[in-house]
Image 1 (spheres, rainbow, N blue to C red):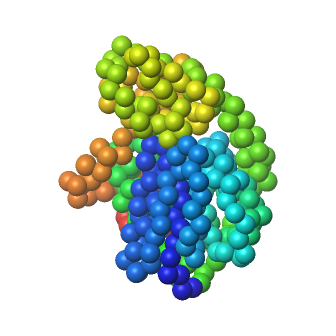
Image 2 (image 1 turned 135 degrees about the vertical axis):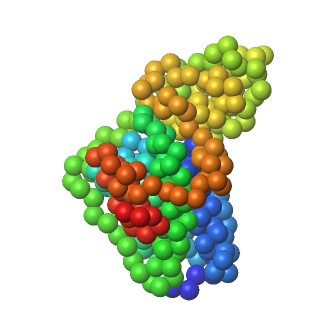
Length: 294
């Protein structure tokens, strides 16, 4: 297919989806395809541009996060415009995530988009259990390789659609309760005595949900549990009041992993890096990249 322009739209919390968006932007641009890029923050107004829509999001509770749903509700109808839907998770295309794109695709189709390709990308986990630096580095290294494969297939006219497991469709519907959980989680965030009132959290919250007034922090009802404030605070001064199990104890910082990659010359075998049974989806993804020894 001959695309000359792409509309790249995404939401990112702690940076994984942003890095996938970076890879797509570079891949299209090196093929002389222009890219219009929009990161969804707060109430972003849709921009109608590009012959192809590429919509990316992190998987939250087996679904697209609230900012994606809001954006879909606001976009104008089109006539059979092609679209690509890319989800990003720490576990890969395995249960219970196989239905995570279905609601998004249905909404796009209602607006007149023709979804020709869907894909699960894998980034280091920032929820409950973190990955070691070697596995995280492997995932970051694999991302642009797999994105290039996707773009090549798109330009060659290949369609790729998947079929979700029935049980995962149920999980996806139940996952919408996370919207209410996010409100509770966000309002229960706490600032400890490490805070120096730098204002980083207020500026960086993608939902504009944090306000600092006279040195006091106020957390609103629009939290989506993206974890950006918790992991990103330079002083590590923000803590959850509830749901502490969801936070990786050692923290989450993709920039540190990328810095380590500059000096990494040898990667472990895939079988060694993903030997735990819970990493089956990650293992299949790394094998697909064909970047590492099995």
